[in-house]
Image (cartoon, rainbow over all chains, first blue to last red; front, side):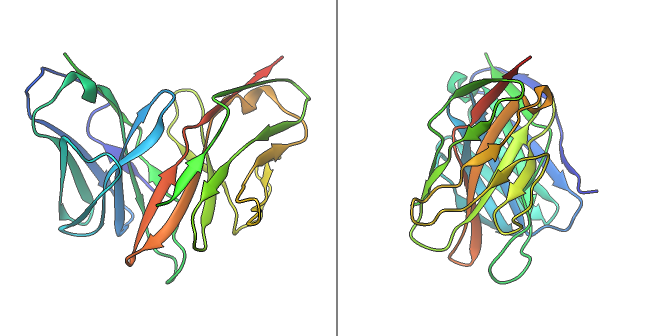
Length: 116
Length: 111
């Protein structure tokens, strides 16, 4: 059973703090993703990674950075948290099936971050 | 750039009525389309993908490349179908995968 685990379910941080959101997957997946989920806006891709130490910007990378030092772990970093980063953050992983298709994306349970 | 459009934020239907959740995409290459579902207090999970051509929980979806659509359908809605549904587009770009989601449609099945 694929497991994608996010380190915190709920997090409250102050404006200006540096925030780390951690995600671990146990299926040896190459690809990992960070999304934020907001009502009416759906899931928006922040960053993704297709290999260790490799990262690509998604659609809304501003204010965020990521780190992937090990294959199983993908961290999202808010360098200086702001109130507009209050959201639900979802981590996901997937893997190639062949040179054209991939597995489905497997999701973590989400981290609800509130910045006050 | 790829885009996924789900025009309805909320769809309310009566139990036993047919359901159609709309999804349109824009992508010039060969897309791979998915429907994901999120039940209350559960994590987002795959419902179905177009290449498998399966029916899951009575739901089906057909990829129409001419209309660039991937609508989700079920002939008779059940109360347990109430959930948030997301259409997603997976593309291979520069040797890696990028997955883009729509804004989601909340399906409410009225008893």
